[in-house]
Amino acid sequence: MQPDTWLAYALACTLLSLIPGPSVLLTTGVALTRSLSAAFMCIAGGTVGSAILIILSLLGVSAILETSAMLFMAVKWAGVIYLAYLGISQIKQARQTEVTAAAASDTAVKNSFVSGFFTALLNPKSIVFYMAFLSQFFDPSGNHLLQYSVLILTALASAALVLTGYALLATSAKALLANKQAQRKINYLSGGFYLSSSAIMAATK
Image (tube, rainbow, N blue to C red; front, side, top):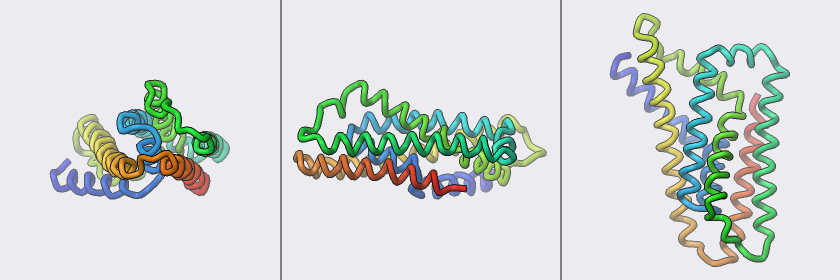
């Protein structure tokens, strides 16, 4: 892979990652309602999930999903339901009179990793997308293993950096809204982010 091709690919990955999607909205919601460390764990979970998706796409699972509408829809709606569940749970928490300390607990941090992982993994559209996208920058005459390694690591690093930026911005905004009433509104907003993520995933075809 030529350096200019890699730079074009890295830029494309970064720009695509900036577009608010399920992972962006989830990470922002976690940063607003839990902690920055929880948001980082969410990003880590999403990175692992995305890595699995990319590998699955390279193994040909994308072709299976393209030809099996039933399997595609099953995976897709599992993701939709999961995100909707997260949104409803967050809104229920917002309706409580007190903001619980559990938002910054070790359990919440671990749950953030799981949420990020499944949000990335249960998005069959991404498998099909990765296969089509990676192929645009792949040189069949070059070293296949090296190229795949570079493409995968670049995609994951770009997404992680962008999500980190969103998490830092959300955390900064949270620091300006420290009172209980504001925190309750943040919880509602976070729940709305999760439900929006669910709707975005449901709308994809």
